[in-house]
Amino acid sequence: MFESLTDKFEKAFKVLKGQGQITEINVAETLKEVRRALLDADVNFKTSKDFANRIKEKALGQGVLTAVSPGQLLVKIAHDELAELMGGGKVDIDYAGNPGIILMSGLQGSGKTTFSGKLANYLKTKKGKKPLLVACDVYRPAAINQLKVLGEQLGIEVFADEESKNPVSIAENAIKHARSNGFNVVIIDTAGRLAVDTQMMDEIAAIKKAVKPSETLFVVDSMTGQDAVNTAKTFDERIDFDGVVLTKLDGDTKGGAALSIKSVVNKPIKFIGTGEKMEALDVFYPERMADRILGMGDVVSLVERAQEQFDEEEARKLHKKIVKNKFDFNDFLSQISQIKKMGNVKDIVGMIPGMGKALKNTEIDNDAFKSIEAIIHSMTPKERENPTILDTSRRRRIAAGSGNNVQEVNKLIKQFEDTRKMMKLMSNKKNMMGLMKNMSKLGGGIQR
Image (cartoon, rainbow, N blue to C red; front, side, top):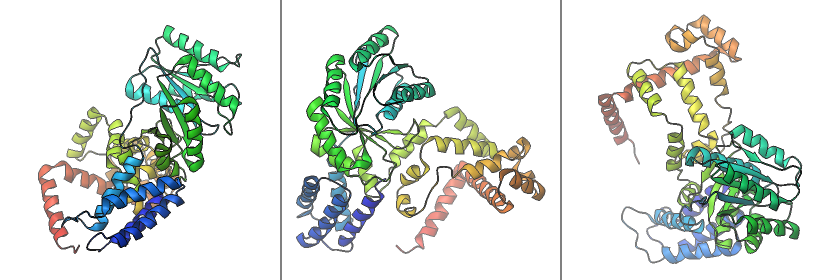
């Protein structure tokens, strides 16, 4: 996500590295690179220029603290301005009402239908709501069926009338159905077009007028850059939407839409889509996105994702097993499963400060755990529970059964044993204190 932009920002701030103070000359050189980075990312020209000017105003004349270099100070100013450019702070979705009505808008191919399913799943699993999905795209072949498949997958009802070609009446009937059957949120998936046209705008304006939604969202493909911003402006002029959803941020996106859209249409980004899975939906936090763009990671989001998969009772059981050195391959497999549920592996790793840069040119396959899982699944229940019995002949059998070679099996078992020893060590507070002391002594000998 935004790898190219991150690299270019880093290059821009290197200009000030080692400088004793911020001057008009060195800050001008840095901001020239910043502007170029933003334009390369397909950010609106006026937005790029205003952004650079605001940084310049704040940077010039500021005294540099003893502990802060000019480069660090400019990064801090740029971070705050990036966050402000993208909205400043999180803006919640409004689903109040009886029922709350959320209307989707956007071009065909932007990901409206998939996002509708993700949003329904989010409201059901994280907000305790009972959502109803409504199929109002009566033009695109298989659009209704796509929503039904998503609904079935998520255990969420889909209201559809395949005999009707009137989206307004379908939406009105869906709301009546919701009131009669205890649904407290209605999510209306509307038709898109390959380009903005009068018929499309008239139709969605008519639906909005008829159902009076509590929230109207504009769904946009973030990979379309400046085109996305121009389309958003057209939609906003006609239907006055409440917020933006950026989809496909896990793709090869430059970042132009995320950085431009708030300043151009003055509407907040509320959600971002970060993958194909129904769980791959994040509330948009401008400050956290600024962290990621500047290569600082996003530890808060990483912890939140981990907590969503965290089970206190299971954690207590696991801790007892670790203390008794009973952690086995079944527990190892369970931990892998929880990590996979957190989302795209490269996205998760990129949230760790410094790791995004370290793995910049490394391909991390989402199926990275497949080989490990195959090896563990090729073990017998007894072998998983008692790794110490894995002798040479057993390892050969496991390698053959999992489609790996013996060296790969040996490597996994060695990594498992090292992990088990470390977990045992860290479970003991005295050992943990000793480990920290040893690390501090070791750190004292490293020249910084």
